[in-house]
Length: 315
Image 1 (cartoon, rainbow, N blue to C red):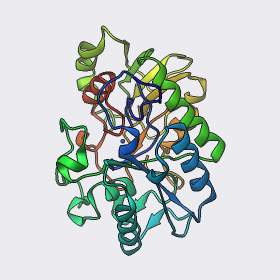
Image 2: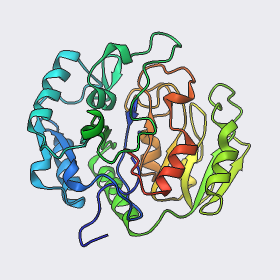
Image 3: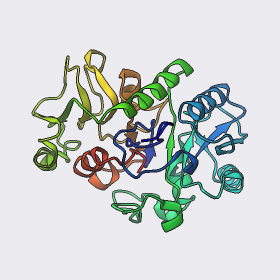
Image 4: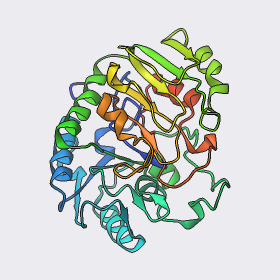
């Protein structure tokens, strides 16, 4: 893979994509010069984590873009977002294909997640109006390593963490995932929560696709305790028990398909940050009621297959 670490050969989430890019396998994927890290100079953790990530991932110095807005607020107004995004787009090198937003707050721009707003632009046509589908994303199953060049879209993720120490540990786990192909187990939980268990019907397909590459555990239970080889963990609950007993492999991806998981600091349900705190490298959550449309959440069939093939979580 060359002398310098490849950027996103792992895999990193929309409505709200959290994480880090872990990397594995020398596949064609987004390169360091194609990712821009965006930091808020008014937020000390944002500045420090953005610098740490840029250095750990060997991004060019010009691929760190500084903006300024009031920190600590869960939601950004459309007007302020338009100003910030215009500044980022203007300063990003022409090679930029994706963004990493180095903050935890804000996670929302009015009726959109901040990562979706950066990727697609703020557009109320993408906002849900009750339990109705929103406009499809051209990124879905797109066979491109250059989403901005080919589709005019720069997918985005958050480098989110409860504090700087956890943020740096998260970056380190992503870098550690560069060293070897994914290993461990895929835990697919079929839970008692009927509304949130909608992905379980496709779990057998995951096993068929990757059963010869990873150990797949299809479990009919609400909680997992004690497993020390977790590479993937997909479930459907508003609150997941037992996370503190688990061991996550570097580059591990996990989510729990609940309405407010992307509300990182003020959610009435479990925040996606809980996965990262427990040791996962990437997670996902929504910030506006998505109902239980499976299209609004990671598809384990596509995510696991493409992740093992060398795509990044972000892709």
